[in-house]
Image (cartoon, rainbow over all chains, first blue to last red; front, side, top):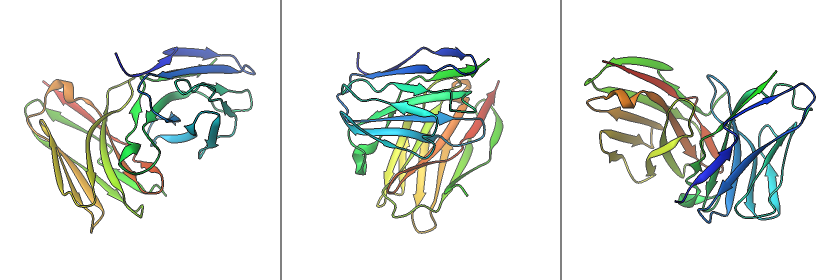
Length: 115
Length: 109
């Protein structure tokens, strides 16, 4: 059963805590992405990775960190430096980052709430 | 200013009726345009993809059009069903992906 999974589905964080969101894919895609979705706004790119052990900042990377130690996994850490982390987080993957092969397949999302 | 503008922001239609969603973009150089459907609390799922040379593409009751000259696209939903209730997102690919804010469609019985 191929696809992209995210866990947990819901996550609650206290002020000052770091939390890590999991993203796994078995589509053999090279590229992976993290987006943040807020009501009334388009998806905003946090980080992306074109290949293992390499990743690039997106438009709103401040307060977030990622790693790409394995092709299948791209975890996102929301640090205490992120001032407004409550949002719906989406992970995606694609064969490549450019051209027609950049069609992204999305995971089911993680809703993070700061208490 | 967002480079991908979608309208309307939301709409309500009766089951069985048709509706059309609009997407205007300013990004360039244009590579392709996709429409995604996103159910509440779920990840987006691709409906259609169109390249520069294509001006229409269908996926069941969904038909997307593209006018690359005017930089406009539309998504037409025919004979709407309750399951069509979702947010529809227009995504334009240039040097990077640009996402519209989406149109929320509510289908009522």
